[in-house]
Image (cartoon, rainbow, N blue to C red; front, side, top):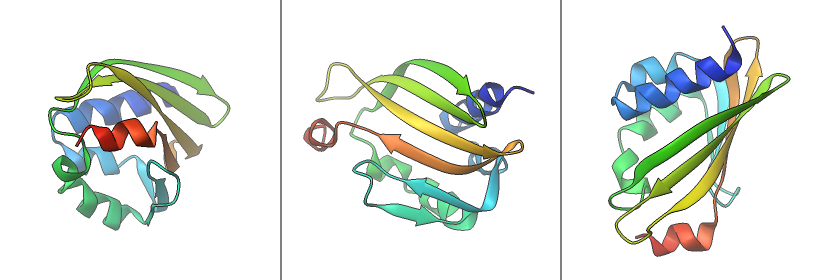
Length: 119
């Protein structure tokens, strides 16, 4: 399976609220680097627990309107088009780094000032 397919499966699981399916594609000692690059979450169990509070970390009315994957060697970049109640449209990127067929790092790249204005 292509790495981009694994990432897409994760986005699909996220959209369906199937968080256990999503985290199955991560190694136990994974790292999530959040918007702004200073907030880091360590470990798959902590990542899974954080997903239960997902609504509180996304701008109200957050919706993905477009999604494409760019696959490189042992990594995939998702380019996400999105909108929310206060933001008519924007993009963000998420880098997924792999060990074999499992994600060990997820790093979000967001215009943090725009993101904050969405709340």
